[in-house]
Amino acid sequence: MSAPVALVSGKEIARYGFPNGHPFGPDRHEHFMAELQSEGLDARVHKLRPRVASEAELLSFQSPDYVARVRRLSAQGEGFLDGGDTPAFLGVFEAASAVVGASLVAAEAIMQGAQRRAFVPIAGLHHAGREHAAGFCVFNDIGVVVEQLRRRHGLTRIAYVDIDAHHGDGVFYAYEDDPDLRFADIHEDGRSLYPGTGAASENGTGAATGTKLNIPLPAGAADPEFMQAWERIERHLEGFESEFIILQCGADSLAGDPITHLRFTEQAHAHAATRLCAIAAAQGHGRVLGLGGGGYNRRNLARAWTRVVQAFLDAA
Image (tube, rainbow, N blue to C red; front, side, top):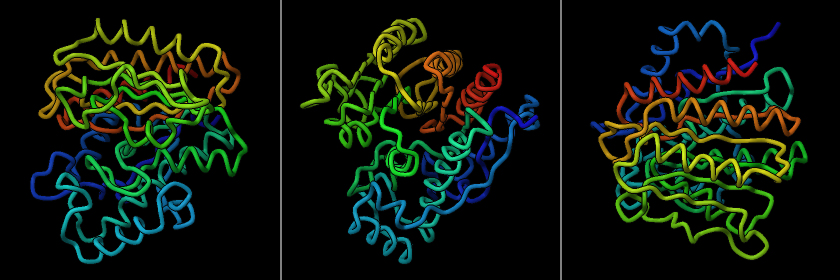
């Protein structure tokens, strides 16, 4: 019997990391993989290799001018892709395209039915907009996955849940007026953390009003506050008959992250993954895609993401 959970990993996405001591360094992938192996879980997942997303796939979400700009700066190997957080390096275009491709490989495996759950550690680049990089995120693999699920598979109702410490602004504003993208985000209050967005009053526009849920938590919030907020997430997903669920499980919301101020434990990530698997099963499709997102304390990200994989396996 095939393993119930797919893992997309490899040097192609490990290369997506910035040099010179940048918090999002290229070593994050290896820390996660070492922890997964130490817990004996690497032998229980179905391993898939990343691929480079095609330009047509990138353009399903990103603008042509922006894709061309990333390609140009990637060849030059210098400069910044945004105001200063996201530096260009030689090959950043290919590395970022591999992150998108890895998320597409995972989504396709789920849609083909061999695995109902999948995880990609270096993925979930939720700050990138259609026309710009932001916050260490070059291409928004989440947006491309949403567009490709709709175009290739005819899905309409997709749920996106984000527990990264930072607000998923690149996803939120891209789909702010889309009633078929159910959005729920627990994050540190934007008054104390980048990108400064995600107020509770931001709940969608037009026909999508009320389909978006932002839950900003104060600096120092820990598991009890997370669990209370999570109950609101589940109520928000009730009545929305999703066809696919995406979990962005950034580990920078754990205590001890060097650039954020929340104090969750890895139990928050295990709980989110477990509950979303149960919701997906109850809604009749069972499809959950986990994306690593942020996390800059290597021990934290290794443990949190391993707990997500464990929860996906336990849901079999």
